[in-house]
Image (cartoon, rainbow, N blue to C red; front, side):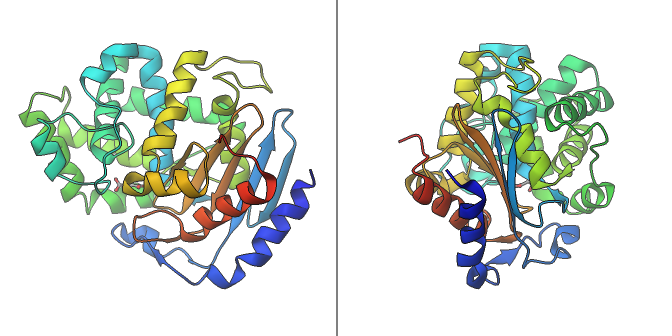
Length: 307
Ligand code: GLU
């Protein structure tokens, strides 16, 4: 298959869509990003990459980092993690407080904000503090992305902390139900730093190969998750990766994927490739408008989907 030709076609066909949607502005530092940008990279089993657009441009991976932290947490806690966070789609906004109250402080899944904050709390308990937990997430991300220099953007993390009322509320609510072990502010600050990791589509696509290949990075041969764990992460990406638009995304694209409010989406074609796409303007669900369309076009043109 001529992947480069397909990516070039996608870029061309979506030019008229780049001005649609809205850059996330509830995190002021993200509102400054030029919205009309686009990049897409696919990485094959042998590491070969095909890209289009601004694939060397770094962007804030935001919620995509929840997949990384969750991968570490299931490896440590295994089934006991599911006492603190569920595995059902939320059908609600990513930062909803209402559902959390009804469900006694147990978040629906690890990819909504409350669930991801609990995962960070669990990592901090295990690794013995905020700095150690963040370092583990960074080390893991550096390893799988092939970029030992990978950083988080302190300006974005600080900007989010200055507008953190809702995420702090989610954490306090969970604490009131006894589903929280560490200091609320420390956990949420660490969560924001993790969300503020910056990557290019080249790096992100490379990083997710372990999920495309049953938990083992096919390039280094290193096993990060066992097959059963990788299956669970992929299943959660398919059912919960796009908040309350997860069903629609699965319907149109047909791949396990995770989005972030920085405009990135990462998707996995099991046993074939991983794909990263980035375009900062979001649709009404908080997922990249052009990114979603690009993945839909990709699976339509290539026939590569899990269905
Ligand atoms: N840091 C963001 C938040 O907590 C992540 C949300 C997202 O990327 O969807 O609001």
